[in-house]
Amino acid sequence: MKRRPVPILVGAGQYTQRKNASPALDPLGLMIKASLVALADTGSHNLRSVIDTVCVINSFSRDDENLPIALSGAMGLSPTSVIYSQIGGNSPQMMVNHVARDIAAGRRRAALLAGAESVYSMHKAAGGKQTAIDWPDNVTLRHLRERNLPVNFDTLLRSGCRHEKDILTAAGLTYQEVNNHIEDAYDLFLPHLMYPFFETALRHLSERSVSEHRDYIGRRYERFSNVARQNPYAWIRKKFTADEFMTAAPHNRYVVYPYTVRVMANINVDQSAALIMMNDADADVLGIDRSRWVYPMGGAELSHIWHVTERPRLYDSPPISESARLALAQSGLTLSDIGAFDLYSCFPSAVEISRQAIGIPEDDPRDLTVTGGLAQFGGPGNNYTMHAIASLVERIRNDRSLKAMVTANGWYNSKHAIGIYGAEPPDHPWEDRDDSSVQKAIDAEALPAPVERAGGILTIEAYIIRYDQEGKAERATVIGHLENGKRALADITAGNNDLRHFEEFELVGKRGNVCYDTIAGRNKVTLFPMDEGKN
Figure (cartoon, helix red, strand yellow):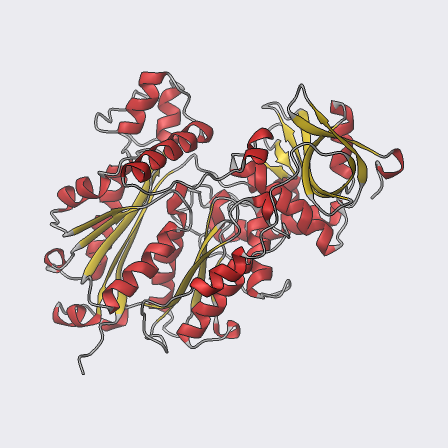
């Protein structure tokens, strides 16, 4: 019987372009830097001839499906397969899982995976704060300049979605809109408008008071800060206290309650990472030192109910629970065997949902990040998790007994991929496992779309408060249920002072009269006086 190839990681590289870099490299230049480091890290001079696949993670600051070809040319590679991923922070771990299955099945021999963002340099140049950047081949920069569009995450994400939709449509595939039409009416497209709903739902579930939960988040991020401070690739290496993370101030304003700037993913970075994967037989032939091999030991990818307002619970993630179960089973490990985690940390609620879904105790002494997290290490678009994996390659090489778990998350706790890594092969080999029955069970829990024109009494399940650039409260939106059990969204009828008042009180569980405002095109809820201001 022919021996089945075993996928391994043999090279990893990271590069962080510092703020005063001149000239500033665009994403392709940064990927070349990280890829050269990853190739050198293998210790082999003949690996280029074996690489048959180049995969590039979707880049907001150079959204170009030709990037894998450009990277291949710059690296002197002649791959038979090139891949440009879709939008989603789940992509790096998902691609590792897919490539591992392909290598095990003999469909691929070796792959270079890379990704990068240069949002910081792009934003700085647009604001006239550095010499104009010369990126003639950067299609995203050209697009922004031709249309006189601002360089911010809103613009880059919307542009990326339009591009992705065009690519899928041209291929005869369906693009799945991230919002249903009800969510669209409440302007809930940007991720930082969705995750605070999860946070307030989690807070109510925990039975912590507003101040206790604020302290809880702050302590979590203070621990992350300690990790980032020691990471040479971190964008921010300054230590912050729990209070400094959570106290709203001019330099750390509320963006969307209960999140300040410092606890949100920071895409305003210039960072790249790359990995080299291959089969173990070729690695032996090339003489790659076995003590430097790191094995993907298990993995799984599942999605949540796609539209947030159709999920029966806003505080959990069945796809994370199931993906972790499947990945651990493949690896032959239990949760207690895992010595290091990197839980996706675009927002505090993402960390907490993952922790609970996996079953990590609240007081677990193990760190939940190996990089420092997306707020301080940096959130380079869809590619963050590749940095976590690259960091774990180094950790496992230094401690061959270490087993590690990575979670990767796309959109609004929507798309998930989990990977487990160690210095030995998995108990069960990588194969084209069919997890469709698990996905169907998750999808079957979906609720109907929310009521567009609601009336009657609404009980709040979760809420957010939005702020302007000066930190002034502008608008509060709730997700709740009516007396008949159906879901509805509504904006709270309140003035700015009342909105600030709501920062200090728990609104989940409070009730009010809801009705449809034909002028605004949205539901409005007026809280019952007895329910206002009660903690």
